[in-house]
Image (cartoon, rainbow, N blue to C red; front, top):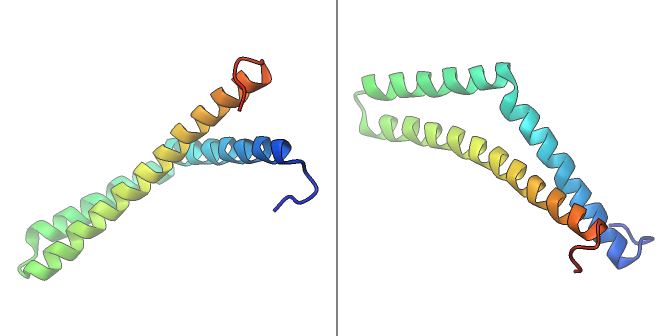
Length: 99
Protein backbone atom coordinates (compact mmCIF):
# COMPACT_ATOMS: atom_id res chain seq x y z
CA UNK A 1 0.00 0.00 0.00
CA UNK A 2 1.10 3.50 -0.75
CA UNK A 3 -0.29 5.48 2.17
CA UNK A 4 1.83 8.55 1.52
CA UNK A 5 0.53 9.11 -2.02
CA UNK A 6 -2.67 11.00 -2.81
CA UNK A 7 -5.44 8.83 -4.22
CA UNK A 8 -5.02 10.06 -7.82
CA UNK A 9 -1.27 9.40 -7.65
CA UNK A 10 -1.81 5.86 -6.38
CA UNK A 11 -3.97 5.11 -9.42
CA UNK A 12 -1.17 6.21 -11.74
CA UNK A 13 1.32 4.04 -9.88
CA UNK A 14 -0.96 1.02 -10.19
CA UNK A 15 -1.27 1.64 -13.94
CA UNK A 16 2.50 1.78 -14.15
CA UNK A 17 2.73 -1.53 -12.27
CA UNK A 18 0.38 -3.07 -14.85
CA UNK A 19 2.57 -1.74 -17.65
CA UNK A 20 5.69 -3.20 -16.04
CA UNK A 21 3.99 -6.57 -15.58
CA UNK A 22 2.92 -6.41 -19.22
CA UNK A 23 6.49 -5.82 -20.35
CA UNK A 24 7.69 -8.74 -18.23
CA UNK A 25 4.93 -10.99 -19.58
CA UNK A 26 5.73 -9.99 -23.15
CA UNK A 27 9.42 -10.75 -22.61
CA UNK A 28 8.49 -14.20 -21.28
CA UNK A 29 6.16 -14.92 -24.19
CA UNK A 30 8.82 -13.89 -26.70
CA UNK A 31 11.66 -15.71 -24.96
CA UNK A 32 12.81 -18.45 -27.38
CA UNK A 33 13.87 -20.79 -24.59
CA UNK A 34 10.55 -20.52 -22.78
CA UNK A 35 8.61 -20.92 -26.04
CA UNK A 36 10.61 -24.07 -26.79
CA UNK A 37 10.04 -25.44 -23.29
CA UNK A 38 6.27 -24.93 -23.54
CA UNK A 39 6.15 -26.57 -26.98
CA UNK A 40 8.25 -29.55 -25.90
CA UNK A 41 6.28 -30.04 -22.69
CA UNK A 42 2.92 -29.88 -24.48
CA UNK A 43 4.16 -32.26 -27.18
CA UNK A 44 5.45 -34.65 -24.52
CA UNK A 45 2.14 -34.59 -22.66
CA UNK A 46 0.18 -35.12 -25.88
CA UNK A 47 2.40 -38.04 -26.97
CA UNK A 48 1.98 -39.66 -23.57
CA UNK A 49 -1.80 -39.09 -23.66
CA UNK A 50 -2.10 -40.67 -27.10
CA UNK A 51 -0.23 -43.78 -25.99
CA UNK A 52 -1.81 -44.06 -22.52
CA UNK A 53 -4.02 -47.06 -21.87
CA UNK A 54 -5.70 -45.69 -18.77
CA UNK A 55 -8.48 -43.12 -19.32
CA UNK A 56 -7.71 -41.34 -16.03
CA UNK A 57 -4.08 -40.93 -17.07
CA UNK A 58 -5.18 -39.52 -20.45
CA UNK A 59 -7.41 -37.01 -18.71
CA UNK A 60 -4.61 -35.93 -16.34
CA UNK A 61 -2.22 -35.47 -19.26
CA UNK A 62 -4.77 -33.49 -21.27
CA UNK A 63 -5.45 -31.32 -18.22
CA UNK A 64 -1.69 -30.69 -18.06
CA UNK A 65 -1.79 -29.46 -21.67
CA UNK A 66 -4.69 -27.17 -20.84
CA UNK A 67 -2.81 -25.77 -17.83
CA UNK A 68 0.17 -24.93 -20.08
CA UNK A 69 -2.16 -23.13 -22.45
CA UNK A 70 -3.83 -21.30 -19.56
CA UNK A 71 -0.42 -20.01 -18.41
CA UNK A 72 0.30 -18.69 -21.89
CA UNK A 73 -3.15 -17.09 -22.09
CA UNK A 74 -2.59 -15.47 -18.69
CA UNK A 75 0.70 -13.98 -19.87
CA UNK A 76 -0.97 -12.75 -23.07
CA UNK A 77 -3.79 -11.19 -21.01
CA UNK A 78 -1.22 -9.33 -18.91
CA UNK A 79 0.35 -7.96 -22.09
CA UNK A 80 -3.06 -6.84 -23.36
CA UNK A 81 -3.98 -5.26 -19.99
CA UNK A 82 -0.66 -3.39 -19.98
CA UNK A 83 -1.27 -2.01 -23.45
CA UNK A 84 -4.70 -0.77 -22.40
CA UNK A 85 -3.27 0.74 -19.19
CA UNK A 86 -0.49 2.46 -21.15
CA UNK A 87 -2.97 3.89 -23.64
CA UNK A 88 -5.27 5.17 -20.88
CA UNK A 89 -2.34 6.63 -18.95
CA UNK A 90 -1.14 8.46 -22.04
CA UNK A 91 -4.64 9.79 -22.74
CA UNK A 92 -5.01 10.98 -19.15
CA UNK A 93 -1.55 12.58 -19.22
CA UNK A 94 -2.43 14.37 -22.47
CA UNK A 95 -5.73 15.59 -21.02
CA UNK A 96 -7.81 13.52 -23.41
CA UNK A 97 -9.58 11.59 -20.64
CA UNK A 98 -10.50 12.32 -17.09
CA UNK A 99 -11.10 9.63 -14.50
